[in-house]
Length: 238
Image 1 (spheres, one colour):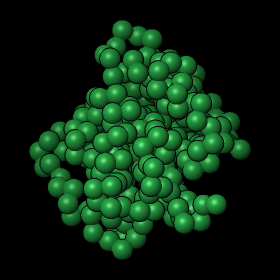
Image 2 (cartoon, rainbow, N blue to C red; image 1 turned 90 degrees about the horizontal axis):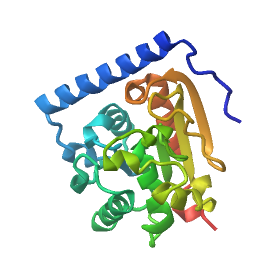
Image 3 (cartoon, rainbow, N blue to C red; image 1 turned 90 degrees about the vertical axis):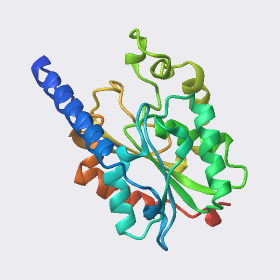
């Protein structure tokens, strides 16, 4: 059972988390723009393959701290180039991810994803992996129940996270595959007020805060490494 950890109560504390989180995101954006990493070197390794799927308006480089740790452990890491900044609808993004699996002939794959990427990963498990290539999804701060912030006058890609509607509702109905998902999330997420707990999945709540900066937290990276190794192989499924 996930630990019950309270979010910051004071408005000042919450504002501090928001400021720190966006400061991290802006710094990562500048760093990645100055030295755009090449994903090809990450594709080497003899370990279990990983498909990296970022969140909305994110390029794959947002997952760079996680990718570096995985690659150091021998995991070849692949990306979905066509996603760009991941502003397309979840079903379309999932089809792109599924195409990469087939084109690269990847098997026993773990999808490691941030935020919206976790929804894309679940969609792949449910609808876009007819060959059974995906062992499971390791999701970091993913809005499996949607986000109440989607009620604000936001852009169309952000409104896709409306609780109980559209892709959120369709994915919520696919309960059987939750056992193949490991959800890792902070105790206070600036973008997902209701949290990332997913019934039937392995839920790992960590005493952290934020939405973007958790990607560089050592505790998150350590849990991702353990999760990638822990998911049963596709050959073990009955």
